[in-house]
Length: 151
Image (cartoon, rainbow, N blue to C red; front, side):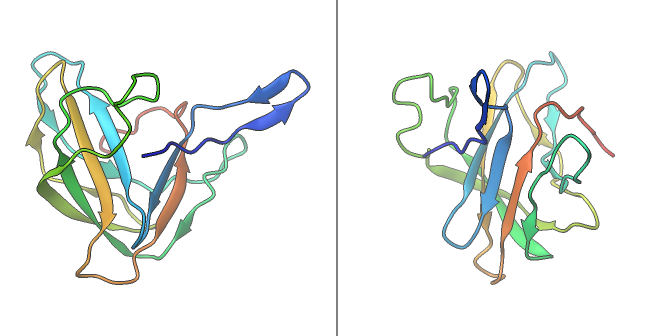
């Protein structure tokens, strides 16, 4: 596993914003991990919304619209981080197919609710659905953007 960066040179040195790259093709998948901090709010949903360009952020969207993306729950109970030795040497095994989402510029796509234990991690893999050829999703997510939960 690897993690892409959007470093850019400045007069003070290279700056690395905390943007995250989502890339899903027939050859590449993306692993995403969430830590559930809210106590007793253990109902989660995976939501994919293609970000829009604004004056401060360019998501550099490239999308075969629509694309069918399988969301696999992975067998990873601990944090995956480049700062934790050995945690990112290889992707965890797939445990179960959570859902298949239709990714489109025109509307958000979301899974049904699933249980997510407080204080634990949910790790998912976004992969092109083999039953729907022509899938390609490529964009950057702005970590500074406010959550849009449900919108």
